[in-house]
Length: 221
Image 1: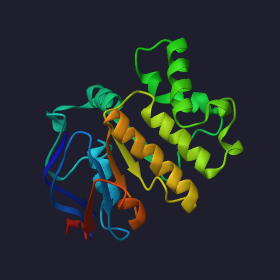
Image 2 (image 1 turned 45 degrees about the vertical axis):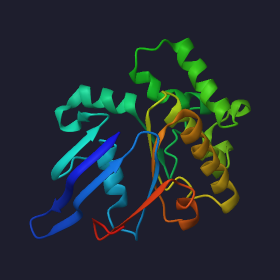
Image 3 (image 1 turned 90 degrees about the vertical axis):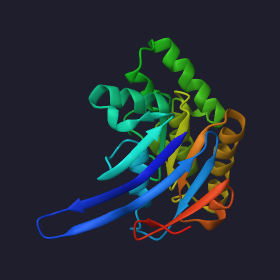
Image 4 (image 1 turned 90 degrees about the horizontal axis):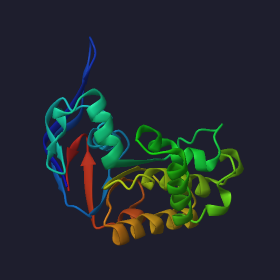
């Protein structure tokens, strides 16, 4: 499903050059639940952003579902990302002025789907994470765990084949973190969704199929 060959990322200024990723080779199978661990600044989020087509590598090749992603530019890149990928962020990234169902609906606004169908799909996604009765609430009326479940609903509303989760339990207590992990695990098992998760939590990482570790931009395990 996802193939990275010799992926590097270098940030340059006039006075300094920083290597964020150094020749990463990684294959992720369809339906796999993979976790990425490592100390702060080791390149975990950079790697996730490159896989998510939010950033470009300095070198190497990335392919998703057999498609070389460097072939996509502009609108075609945005369309590919919108249809293939769902994103979950540690800080939720909900829009405070929109109610919950409208937040979940946002990724569908970029597709040719009418308003009625968008609402039905958003309601179904909220139901799948146990928040059907909260759809008219606003983000500031929810707990951290509920906000993260809304973020998951938004990530899955368009039925993406791949979910990229950046510290999805990082701002949650252990109980709410377990709830979020159960939702992700069920998505992986029931829908065969491919999930790549960045985490600092060894306990959460052990719930996934495979763990890789990064250190100073290099894969060490």
